[in-house]
Image 1: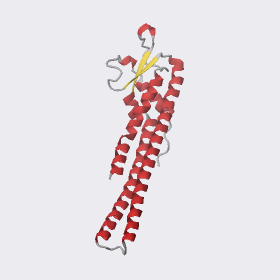
Image 2: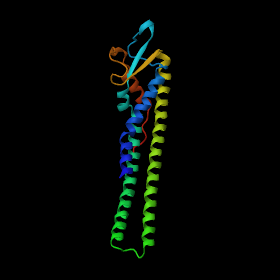
Image 3: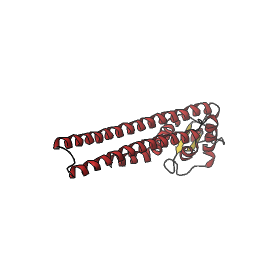
Image 4: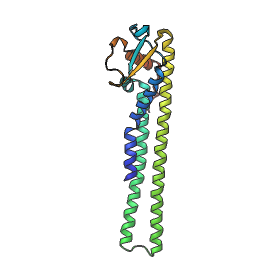
Length: 203
């Protein structure tokens, strides 16, 4: 069914897309903030520069992990809800088709009424699908803001003592083709972020 196929595409990519967008935003703001590095590496013209491997934060920052798990759970609940309603609708369609072919309705008017009722159910399902997908996207945007704010607030506090001029975000080879590992602050950032974060109790 078209509704379910479209939802499946949305659900499958939602969490990963949210994190990529979110950390891109964090990194963009972070370039104007600064964090420290384990080694006091000096960049060109005396600038202190460091970089963070975003892929590592995506998979190991507990806040991101929890947000991702919550979104997967919500997405799966939406998928199950719409699947059930779609299956019920298809069953009613099949029953209507069988009755209509067997002349089981007392009149053409009664058959038309049943047809209209099923058509309305299909329209309602489409509207529900749109509504739930919109809610998922809104939740994703909310998570983006929360995670971005978490990173930015940490960097501001962390850099009070470290005083770096730039932090560069690195995803694969997108930004850095080569960098001395002395500039890599990923592990230190990750450890302190996780130390500050308390995961909610699992249900």
